[in-house]
Image (tube, rainbow, N blue to C red):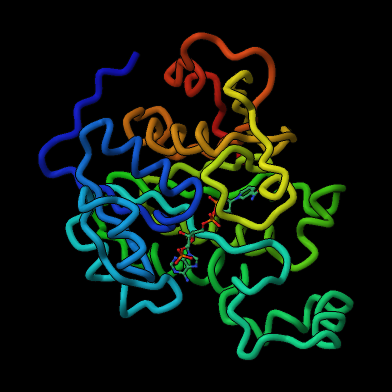
Length: 276
Ligand SMILES: NC(=O)c1ccc[n+]([C@@H]2O[C@H](COP(=O)([O-])OP(=O)(O)OC[C@H]3O[C@@H](n4cnc5c(N)ncnc54)[C@H](OP(=O)(O)O)[C@@H]3O)[C@@H](O)[C@H]2O)c1
């Protein structure tokens, strides 16, 4: 078991804090005694959600000028921002598409994102790159929630998932982090399950749950597939910043097998390779 104690100057910025994984990340950080600042587009929502237990910085990762105030004096950044893989209202279309426009979008994915202001290209690629640029040079770690399938975009089911470019965009986000020179950990989860239910995918509609029964499996090199509990993904983000062995590492995470009484993160992390 790790005996990490946050130091008084440690301050963690969580981008995507109001999302499913992000809320759980904030909860775990507070449990471990970290000071937390959340980056949000909606201060009122964050205030209600976190009950005055966190600092709130209003910002949007698409707007670089909103980020320096949010990243000032932070020692860690955990980024779990995202939008839907397929067009939805979260893509922030200039005008809500009508029926014919929706049909065109689905028949011609490449043309659609031009009309959207919050597509995967806007957030997962450009937005993440903006956040990297705004990070303090002495940052101790940038943890990024990416996705399984980055290196298997031409293989089913990832070829379908990448129909509107979400995996291309996540890969560009990863590349911006790696080439920045900042210490990083990149986490590639499988299909997210377990609440809080904030996104619009099939698992969310079905409210799929592990029931806390499945073990945690980590892998290197984009080979795993399957479901990943948001609870365990959030734990992996927080455990990564307290475990130095995860610095400079990229790993996948899914839930498989029988859950042991305690998830031994240090042992799991010791088994991951350097991977790409
Ligand atoms: N769904 C899956 O099966 C799956 C699989 C693998 C990886 N992932 C990735 O896992 C991560 C977490 O997923 P989730 O379901 O927990 O996410 P989520 O609930 O959809 O949350 C997304 C977060 O991103 C924030 N956000 C969106 N656009 C933003 C912008 N322009 N500026 C600042 N913040 C912005 C949202 O804030 P607001 O409250 O302002 O909207 C929200 O807090 C995402 O990166 C997702 O891509 C998902």
